[in-house]
Figure 1 (tube, one colour):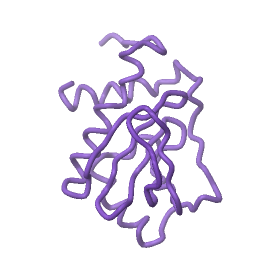
Figure 2 (cartoon, helix red, strand yellow; figure 1 turned 120 degrees about the vertical axis):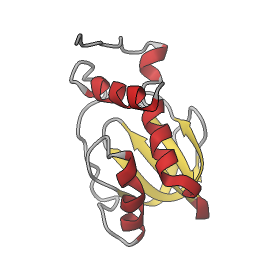
Figure 3 (cartoon, one colour; figure 1 turned 135 degrees about the horizontal axis):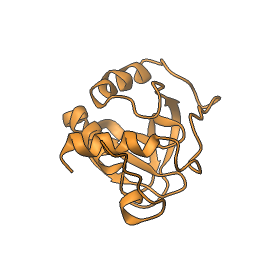
Length: 140
């Protein structure tokens, strides 16, 4: 099986996280009101949740949950009183609902510590291959 590298900053590369975000939103079911891609550098995405909360994902620190303050497609989302969910950059979509429940219960890293699993500048570190796995899984 040949390894396929996507060239950084192409449209395909910018939109690589979409399948993963979609799968997470689907796993959240009725909790997810809307979701969208965020900006680049790092690539990011937001899932608005019922009750005024949101999840934000980025390719450096993974998921964080908090109270939605502002944001929209293509812009940075601002959260208040947020917690990092942990579990790495690509927490399995089916694991996210339980991680959100844990964050609501006070489990996870508070805003005092931001995990940094990788730098968005590391283009050939294998992360894009992991994103491709979710695109194939989602049938994108």
